[in-house]
Length: 98
Image (tube, rainbow, N blue to C red; front, side, top):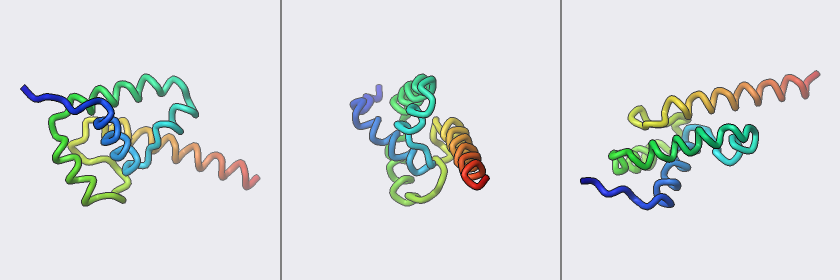
């Protein structure tokens, strides 16, 4: 049976992968408090992952990838959150240019 890393260590790993993917959870939740549920779901998913070594190796060699690793359990969620943030950034820029 695999023993999971302490929650704090997994939170750091998830935060690092999220940042590589262009997502900052604190900002995401601050902009939409309902996203806290998605954050906790992502934490649980990461905590249950058995590919921590692959994850750490991938992040070390892809620090500016702009997306999560293909094997990341949170890849789809992080992709959607990044796209939403980009759309919001574009709308803000359009409004500032008016």
